[in-house]
Length: 226
Image (cartoon, rainbow, N blue to C red; front, side, top):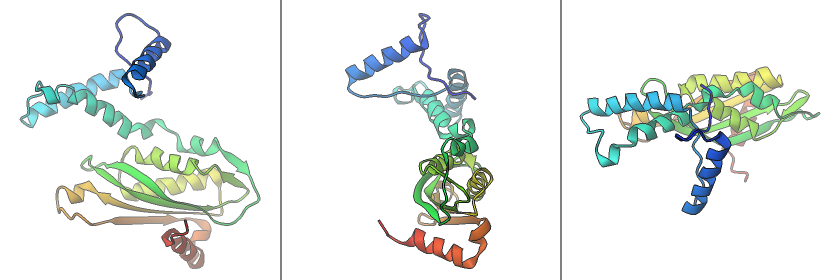
């Protein structure tokens, strides 16, 4: 799916004109908002969500629900926009030669994803480290890689491994460590209904397979250094 900026317009206006109109309207309304979605996909999603609303016994023409199918369609495109992102290209866009061979850690990265089994959210934090081997990467690219994989239908175990493999295969560092802690709504609001359970997954390569290096990483992500 190619994500584009769309707005219904029947007068044949160009995309630039539509965006200008949106900007003017937003300025008048006192806020700035720009939805990114594919109109063709949105129409199909909205149609099916309207049918779902009917099937669960609700009136899709009720005032509060009238625009719900379209809203949910837009939300679903945003929540799964990771399918349109290439994590390797994200990393390659900010790789720099640097003779630094100590641990680089980005911790407490917010994670929001959808469980592929029930399509309910799971969310938490990711802690990621790598040991450079001739190249470092712009720090913001690591959270972007997390989002690229998280904004899909996922399971936490695969998410952990995909992040690790992407960084390892692209940067070829001396080692990569990934730990994710998350709460799963499919366990909290349905099923077993355990409200305070947290799932932790981890995966390591290279130097982090050493108990000493791994222990240092675990200690640092658990420390309140800031």
